[in-house]
Figure 1 (cartoon, one colour):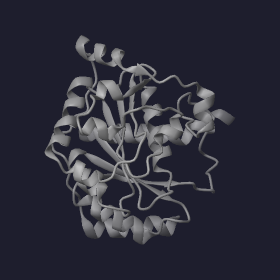
Figure 2: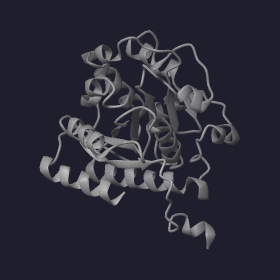
Figure 3: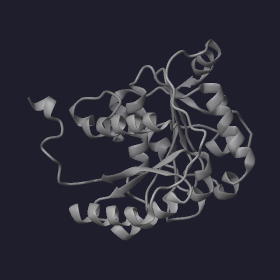
Figure 4: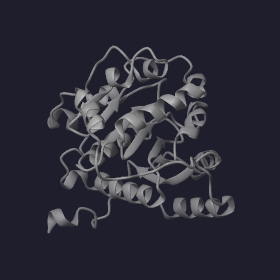
Length: 271
């Protein structure tokens, strides 16, 4: 793990800082009545805690088993707030790294902050997985919203009081073409304006698998990379970072599926 960190740090120093969307803004405080009405009008996602846990969504209730996701949630929230960022893309170098599971847990963990509204949108349209994770079905998908067949209000589901989840129930044929449309950016801006989320999370396809993520990056403020311990190589992660840094800010790299936990984590639950 130390060798992986050293290799990435050396590559970062050679690259320098990246770019990013310049109008991101993370705010807290009063929620206008019209915004609250829009949230209340979203159809609820009826899922109990046990069903979510069976699909490895464990951050909703907190506790010892959610410690790693809670730490990630807090770091993400603090870094985005300090930089004035609101939109986060979550990707990985290659498939199977657990990015969607991480995105789902990060979303429900952030949703436990009662003073923040959170939106999670699934932009992985070639191999969607959030419907299975959340155990839900539906007629329309995220790409139907972007194609303007339905509105976000008609398609999204609300988990709890302040987490809106927009999921793909079907596959899309050419997501990159859809992401490159100027109308897509306008629709994302409209969702942000109508629902005033503190943070918007976008579960993206693997960065090195196709051009879908590259096509969408102009719509986000920063990106988080999910690497798989023992599988993702320093070369893959560095290539992923370099390509992301050309278009947005890099929030960090999460080493997922690590089999060597530190005893210091979860200290408060064993004291």
